[in-house]
Length: 416
Ligand code: PLP
Image 1: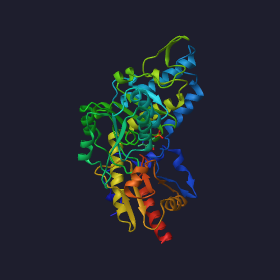
Image 2: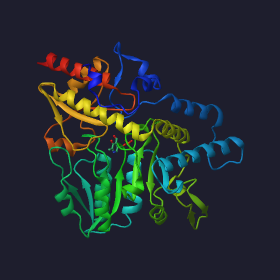
Image 3: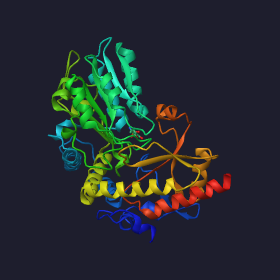
Image 4: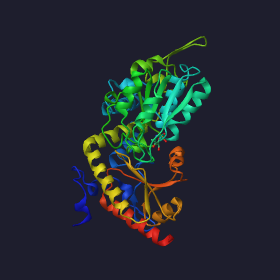
């Protein structure tokens, strides 16, 4: 039986065909065909996104929201249409709940500074998890230092799953914020966010979800999830860099003061007093990344065209195949075996430093990420300095997994 035939049904997506949507995948790296397994760090861009950005700059560019001339009207229209598309994609009730930001990092910092900082008091608690990306740890650490609140950490087990009883015990009357990732970038763990959010909200906490590694891989509905805020990055979901979204419940956004002042976020300004615009403009000071927003709208359209259920089924099947193949390599150690996995798998190889492994794979044209993945507490949990991580996009297929495994076997032999 061929390897391909061993893989569960691909749910209608044909990665060989989708690969043709991504011009960069036509290039060679070190005279080898590029095998791109680093979408968790940043995804490659399909032609419809590239075309939308180029079309925007070629035909429609001007600044938004400030002009009456035709180009400004067209740019504003494209910008706001992207917002509406994004809102529908994540199940927001209204486009007004979607604030354009630089990315997940900025979205999480915005919540920490504009929602939490004025509200937290000494003795209040912010609960994060052991598997958070640094961008869902550091902003909370900073706001705790600023307010006297305490940062608490929900631990995980060696499989990379949160410990339910410990989580439960950490939720209490002083829990004001639960900041949790939906999918771990380092381990691929899918957290049961809806369940945990319900528990946290029942205790009166606000739930902030890091959706950076979830939105590209599965259907997301922020309302069903029970989130209060939800942040994600365009560049991990086939859109340009420098653009992302912070979704927030409108009543929360309306209750917040802006965290940056400047043009576009005001209703009126005098030297005595400034009245702020309603959300989302209140949080979008200055000229935004208009082309990025246009590209993000095109990326959403691309994903909608594939169907997020199909994307999820395709990637889950591929991950399952990848885990099985990696397990069959003597000397390879999977880091984490979460009950539910999305997007990525981390591993180490006996006797090979992850950086050497990454360099060896690169020489074979296989791009994986090595390092701590901005999740040093995860590395500490496993008492390792780094892992190699393969992460997937819609264009990846079983042949990419086979190339990865072939190169890992080669590295193990080379460094033996
Ligand atoms: N959260 C998670 C889970 C991530 O994987 C990343 C990026 O890798 C981030 C947050 C930060 O995203 P960005 O650098 O786009 O702001």
